[in-house]
Each structure stands twice: as structure tokens, then as C-alpha cells.
Length: 169
Image 1 (cartoon, rainbow, N blue to C red):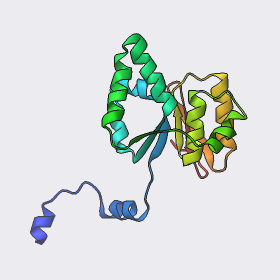
Image 2 (image 1 turned 180 degrees about the vertical axis):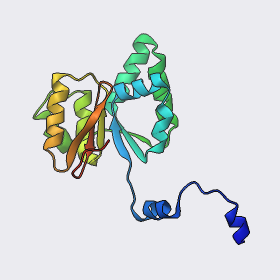
Image 3 (image 1 turned 45 degrees about the vertical axis):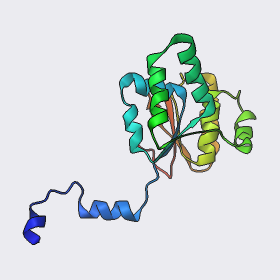
Image 4 (image 1 turned 180 degrees about the horizontal axis):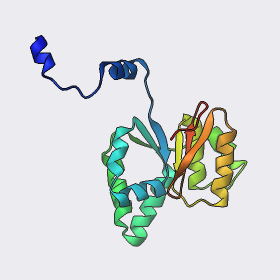
């Protein structure tokens, strides 16, 4: 038996496996339509399967449906098809109290819905919408909340993270 195990190649070390099993890392995020569209254009939608849970607000799905109905946009269609087949993607909307936190500060649109849902789920918000005045206000609102921290831009995207101290890479 020892000779058999000696010949096997293990992907992870024992220490890493112990750490993974001991400390559950919850990889959850909220995405908007622009982020899904950018991932579809780059052919990287399959990377979302590596996450535990991905939330997409109803307003983002509506945005993608408008894109394919008006312009027959192939990346938008690809994003919608992927959402339909991927088991870890959930379409939902933030509850009313989460919406009110955001509606009191900024105009409620798709990026605002993403931030409201991220505040509710206490997870990362990824906004691929161009960096506009409303998105800057949303960033400020997001960072006012306890333990929320800005990480870095993703192309034109605003990536927000629930953090405890240092900024992530």
C-alpha cells in the first residue's frame, strides 16, 4: 500500500487540504450585465463556475434581454445562455430595506441594484458599468458599511469586497 501511495501525484499538499477543510472560504459575488457581457466577450464566463455562488439582479437580466431583442447581440445571448446552464448562478433582487439604503443616496439603476444586493448578501459587488458619478457615489455608500472595502478596478469595473483590514490583490 505504501508503494502504491508513493507513486501517486497529489494536486494539493496535506497542509493545504487541512486548511481548506478547516476554514470554509465562501466565494460569493454579485455581477451586473456589463461584467457578464465583458466576460462573454473575453470568453471567460466559465470562470464563474469556480465560485460558490454568483448573484445577478433581475434588472441586469432585463438589460441583457433588451440587448438581444434590440441588437441581436451575441455576447449578451451567450451570457444569458450561460446563466441558464450554470447551477451556481442565482437571479434575484435585493429586499426592500436593502434597496432603501441605496435609494436614499443615489438614483436607483442597475449598478445601484448590484450594490444593494451585495450589501444584503455581504459579498463582493462587481460593477462593469463605466465609472460614472453614480458609481462613485455607490462606492462611497458601499464603503460606509462595516467591513466593506474597495479592492481594485477590473478594466472599467468597480470591484468591491467585504474585507477585514488589508486590501486584496
